[in-house]
Length: 329
Image 1: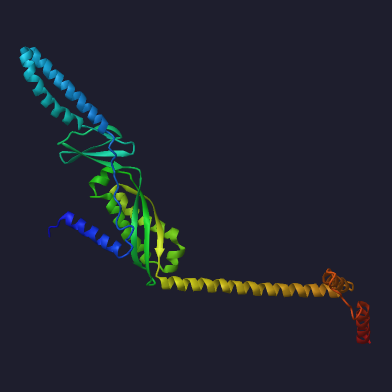
Image 2: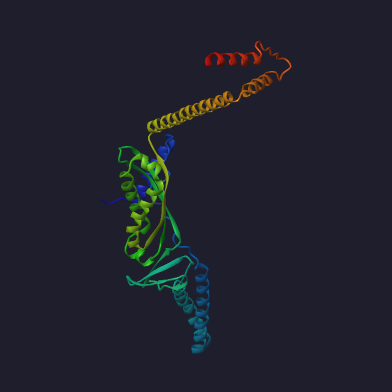
């Protein structure tokens, strides 16, 4: 069914305007964002070549006309030379192209692969040749939000970013229609496949392994397109709100459990230490008296406190000695 690109674009813009009018949030990323591959560096050089060749051709035509027919011949040859030399200079100026240091030009001559040129000045003859400039730097593509169902049937939304590089410009141009779009689509499919085979706990705790696995899967296919996957990073993992609340309660209960266990272990250690201290003081006759005096010193450090000892320590010691004597008899 034929369609009009302008009509489709107008419909998309109208839908976006309606969404904004209703206060709806538009998705920040929907597809792999295209970027400009070629930076035009030879425009100034082509202008200079055009002017120089045009002027030289006009002067040469005038000199030939002057030599052949004198002034009347020069008057006829000069305008004709201006027109002819302009078109010749225009064609020759478009022969010169300039590729940046990070660019390589894939040249097709009469539809067949002719060679890989660049960086620097390259010669591309219009009509016969067609050149496609390829950026060989590290490139970045977005992976838009993907709705994925994990192995334990939890719906999550995951997005990420791809870092890749073109290693073989010839294969990247000839073997695949659009290597950027192909890498982005294959990465999206691989992300859904890998995450769909894992549980939610594995997704949250093993992010590095998931990223490495997705990158290796995409690399196995992208290498046949002349590209190399440097890495794939997961940016955001979005879960349903009710699941987030349940996970928050679970984490709170886990922290409370650890706090209760820590407090119980502290009480146990304190009881053991107190029992050891009591055994030490019972083995030393003067230890209890020193402890009692330390306690009294702590209580009476303020002038407002008054400490009265109803039973002296010596009486207690005497009672203890009498009890031991009776037990021995």
